[in-house]
Image 1 (tube, helix red, strand yellow):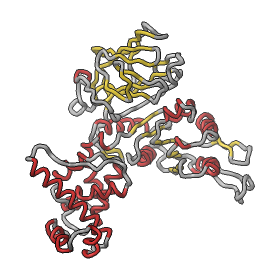
Image 2 (image 1 turned 30 degrees about the vertical axis):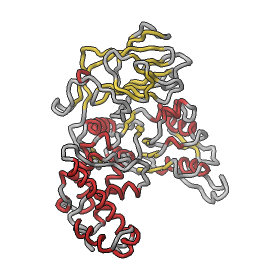
Image 3 (image 1 turned 90 degrees about the vertical axis):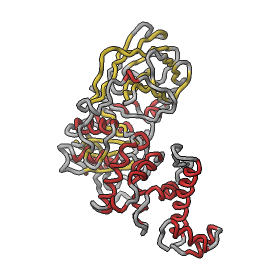
Image 4 (image 1 turned 120 degrees about the horizontal axis):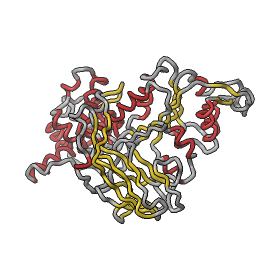
Length: 464
């Protein structure tokens, strides 16, 4: 049996899902998300007249037999699209298919589905039909899973599945944007398993050259290649009884993919340069920030390996889709870095949280942690986290446009002054840090008078 879990994705449309599809939000209903069950009615194409109940958190459609709904049609890609259950209802997402996915005649990357929505995949047209029955999706009762923190619905869904499957030996794939915490989650799954006292071996498939990755995974014998001066164990042998975490699995070369598939199917390996088969006892967890469904469609990643790796699929949501988790994350990072009383060193915590919630967080949780570390390196107290947002963006080389944090609830003049102050604080912090707090040099670089710079420093209470 294959279990697939999908949490909230970025919606690139302005579609609004009718509230009737979500019957409760999970917050006050004994830790579950209740949504209307739905079916798909095929009105044209090879399966015309057939009905299919959407019976998974994520329901895949495509021409491959591995999908929940298989359409044998040359105009449909292997993994064409998927319908996922979300806090706001049902979302359909195109999986970079060749001919695209249309909703109400419009080609989409993702869109919320309303009752009666018509979906078109190649020659097939499908109508989305909600039913009267409800479907309960369980959430964790906890707001953390080891080092992972989150009170939001998508994170509590992740925690529920992690709590459920960590004690087993099931293979897990973790996907999500860079900085969402994939390795942390993999580590915690290992720590909550029966293998927790055995090794947790990490292999970064993107950081190791193609020439060495096979040896890193499977080991080698002396003389197998130039520089192989002795026998060497690979990750799978070193992790005997424990867990191997294959990070950036999407970068694994096509030549090695069948060998990894053999490990998953037969639980045995061969060292490079040796014909002897060695049995292994390991659990495999993989992670990627790539769209592996697209890689499968384009023939860059083996379809059978994809399904072997993603028996359980956990997709970590980006921070911008779980903004209610920002405050608890800040508190936890502050405690870890500065101790229990660190929050007292922040200026206007509530106002700061509102500003941070409006930020887009291209670097996700990692960017938030970097922000706190950077801010506390400053000698200025109390610490204004929002003043360091621009510095974190610069240091992360973000290509995102600078964000304007303002409120239309204030008069224009007041909002404008707040924005100017926010810019001046961030600019001065960056300017002074670059010039080792040298006032004269900072003034020259900024092209302003030294006396004016000193007035700004005094205005914002910065140490001269």
